[in-house]
Length: 221
Picture 1 (cartoon, helix red, strand yellow):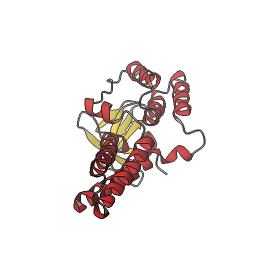
Picture 2: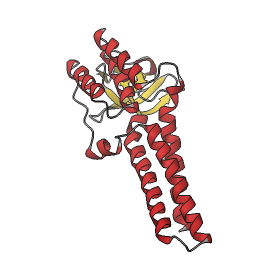
Picture 3: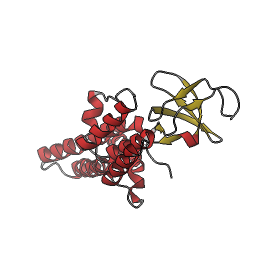
Picture 4: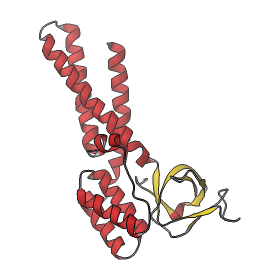
């Protein structure tokens, strides 16, 4: 039981920190789901699908249940001739709430479960209530863990914000491009070196692209 409590606490703290990182830039003025949604609309009207997709993706992290954000995101992707982004059933269910809410649920769940486990060591009364409280707390932490797993790919994804972005075999400005990326395409960010990012596409292709052409979905400080 003690080992379970420690494991649950460590896992919960790790994922709470992960989700707090994803939501940390909300401290910046205007960084809100509504503000990012409006910014995405402005870029879409200006014919900049990359920046529109980026801001819609960021808005969706803060408001995952907003149908307007999802609809506009899919419309811009379709208009830019990009394949629609699909989420697994697990991703849709686990990501129904924002990272900040999920992190608070996990923190409260750890407190509830920890208090019930601690109470069990000093008293044998109210056993059913303690078990119920422990189960409730563990369920809340589990929700946080699932939300963190669903969020993980977004923490390592970026949007191509420049049309026909060249991707090279090495992180240098010389040499021929292996292939080019379409504006608005979402790629995996696998590494970084001296102003270049190692990217992997959904089709499995990889190479180095300039940091100026790729913007991470979760802003970096």
